[in-house]
Amino acid sequence: MVAELAVVTEPLPKSQVGMTIEVPAELVDATYERVLNRLASRAKIEGFRPGRAPRQLIEARIGPAALREEVVEAIVPEVLQQAMRDESIDPIDNPDVEVLELERGRPARLKATITVMPQVTLGDVSNLALPDTPAVEVTDQMLERRLDDVREPLAEVTPVEREVRTGDVAVIDVEVEADGQVVESESRKAMEAELKEGVLLPELLAALPGTFVDEQREVTVKFPDDYSEPKLAAREGTIRVTVRGIKEKVLPELNDELAKQLSGGKHETLEAYREAIRSDLEEAAKAMSRMAREQALVKALVDSSQVEVPDALVEKELATQLESMERSLGRQGMRLDRYFEYVGKTVPQWAADERPDAEARLKVDLVLDEFAKRERIEPSDEEVDRYIDEQAVKDEELSGRVPEVKKSQTARRYFESRLRRLKVLDRLAEVGGVREPAKP
Image (cartoon, rainbow, N blue to C red):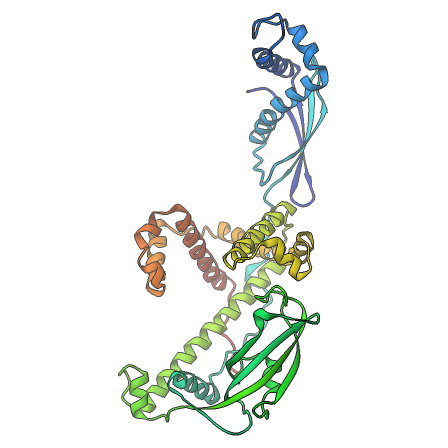
């Protein structure tokens, strides 16, 4: 269909475009004829061979309202597609269309509301307000903690007859209760638990030291929203722990022999090994500082930029997140509806809670994508191939699938997107004049 359409557009809030379309009367009449021909070819009317019944009889049998509905379904998609092409409008979801006027012998009028990708006005990258990001200092305490960690697998664990102390391995019976009901999936018998930060819940880590065998401690815990057991997610529960045994953990002595063993023969002396560990920690600290600077720079750019995130994009982001959650729960043998029953939420309530974070993520993506366009950052095929090779060195699973991954368009788009983001961050740091972190 090619027709002279009269189109008037107007910008609307939330990155939408209003479009009023006038369709020539001859096109309306031609569509009526086309629809009638199609209906006539299918019509089965007693006394007439298929496709031979008079038009007036077919129209009377169908009725004017039903005929008009058929014409609307035929003409609206075609007219809308042509109008959007003529006006160079690229929708990001299905337009909302209202038929204002449509009858034979007269021009038709349609009104469409179309959501498009939003316009992004970037802030002044060269003048971003950035907070100071002091460097992370590698202290002797951090070094000693790391040396303890690397000796951990070689530690000797022996039973002792005394109270529980921080660093011990306690043999415990655990009972978890929520809303007056014991949660069997979280309760354990004779479980070994090390009294160490990051291993036990902080509440238990504070309550257990000083406990003797057969003594019980009870703590109240507020479980996080994303806790793996849905019966406890976002709820308050009671944990009762009974100590059944106590084991002391003794790390092997640090010396030249152990340093050689731990380093796989790379370092002959403890002093050399300590310096190597300190150097690794300093590199990690630099990486953390660099990441903090990048995050601060991105936040400053996003805060100084202007973009109105369309509701349609937010809805798509939430739908993708919900699908991912459903797949994850499915791997654990749980249905999505049952999960929401456990956490006491409906899908709309969940979506309302997640909406601000989804909108914030989209805003970051839109701003950084606009920056990439402005700076003409687009990885070449050769750069993507090299990046996949680099990642394969670090990822054992990927290393055996490199040729397959390079041929897959979906996989290439994934790695291309990651590489583009890295290039954007590098370029942003360059043009944003990010300074090295201040010395503490």
